[in-house]
Length: 112
Length: 113
Image (cartoon, rainbow over all chains, first blue to last red; front, side):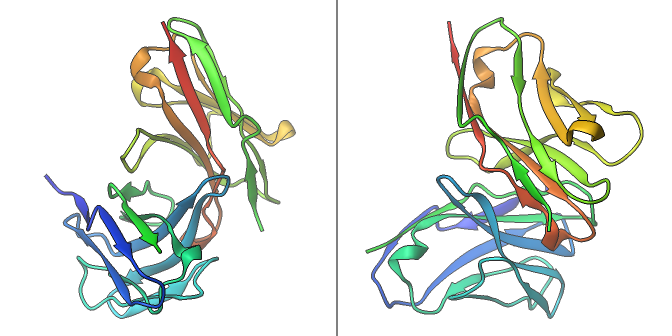
């Protein structure tokens, strides 16, 4: 079955370090998204991509970057981790505009 | 810009009782509306969605939602709650492109025997 997987499930890092969170989907979806989930804020969009070589900023993109070199993967990089980036990160994909999002199981990131 | 409000942070219901989770949105035109459910430690799963047409939408697991334009609401309902429905529920509104999909802050549902 097609799926979307995130790794690692849990990550602890130190302030100032670069961190990369992986997202891999086998749905062959062109559209991929990164969200962060924080108590009291729901899910907020960080970055998204509509296809290979396409990346766009979401509402909370500062301090994050993504790259899309193939259809299956959209890694999220924290250039210099900050304590404010402690959160649960979700990757999602979808087939087309207005269609449902398929979510990964999330990555719990702690920045100490 | 659109926004969505879920006024109830936490709701407790007895197993077998009916359920209604509230969602209000703000958007100038008819938006896309979604309800997602999140079980502990998991990602979100779509329960149902509304784009146009019949304002009463049926979803998975026996859930339904009604779009009421006059009240800017899209409340989620279930006639009889099961213990397995305990989870967090998110309302989301989208309009004109993915970057404009906005999630509410969620309602955590507790089901007691």
